[in-house]
Amino acid sequence: MLTNLSYLRAFAAVAEQRSFTAAAVSLGVSQPAVSRAVRELERACGFTLLERTPRNVRLTREGVIVLEDARTVLAAVRSADERIAQVVGLSRGRLHVAATSTIAPYVLPAYVGRFIEEHPSIDLRLTTAHTRDVQQMLLDYAVDLGLTEAAVTHPRIRSRRWGTDRLVVIASPAHPLAGRRPVPPAALNEELLLLREPAAGTRKIVNASLRAIGIAPSRTIEVDGPEAIKQIVAHSRGIAIVSQASVAEQVALGRLVVLDVTGLHIERPFFRLSLAGHRGSPAARAFDAILDDRGGARARRR
Image (cartoon, rainbow, N blue to C red; front, side, top):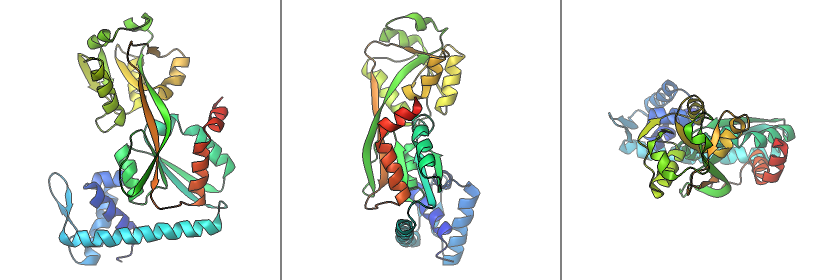
C-alpha cells in the first residue's frame, strides 16, 4: 500500500503546493481524488502526514520523513521510465508537456502538429497552467517538459531561454484611440484597462511596464484568461495589453486593432523547463528538437 504511486504523487504534490486544490490542478485530477489518495496513504502509514489549517496545509514531523522517501521513489520511477523508453525508442510511449496560457494555445500548435505527424505512435498530452503550477508539475514528475513566460529558479529545474514574445495594446476598431498614430502615453490614463488574474505572469509585466512610463489607468477590471479579455475588448471601450501572438488572427480579420503607444515597448522571453540531471525520454528529446527548429515551425504556419 505504501508504494501506491498515485498516493505518493498526490501526497508529494500537496506537500509542495501546501494546498489540495493547487495539487489537484498540477496533477490534472479532481480535488476529491487528491484528498482521497492522501487519506488512504495516511491510513496505510498509521499516522497523520499533513495538518490542515484554515489558510494552508503543512507537513507533520512524520510527513517530512515520508515526503523525502516519496520523492526518492518517484525519482526512481521516472528514471526507470526513461531507461525503458530508451529501449522502446519512439515506437510507442507518452509525452506530457505543460505550458502557460499564452504559449499553449498560440505558440505551440505548430510544434505540436509537427510532432504528431513525425511521431504518430507517441501519445501527447498538453496541459495549460500558470508558471508556478508548471514548475510544480515538473517537481512532482507529472510532466516531461514545461514552457513558461517567466523564469524559474530552482535547484532541481533546468531553465533555458526559448524565444521572445512581444506584448501589444489592443482595442476595438471603434475605440476613439484606434485612429490615432501614435497614441500619447497620457491618453491611457483615462482608459479602462483589462488585466489578467494575479497569478498570471503577464499581469506583473504589464503593471511594471505601465509604471515605468508613468501610466496609471483610472479603472481596471480583472479577467481570467486571454480569450475572455480579447472578446471583452472587441465589444467594449476597454483596452488590454496582451501577447502579440494571441491576437494575430483577430487583428488580421479587423476585429481588434493594435495601438501604437509612444514609448511603450514590452518584450518578454519564453523559457523551456526540464528536470535537472534527467536526460529525458526519446519522446521528450524529439519534442525538444522540434522546439529548437523555430524556422521549421514558422514555415508550417504559413
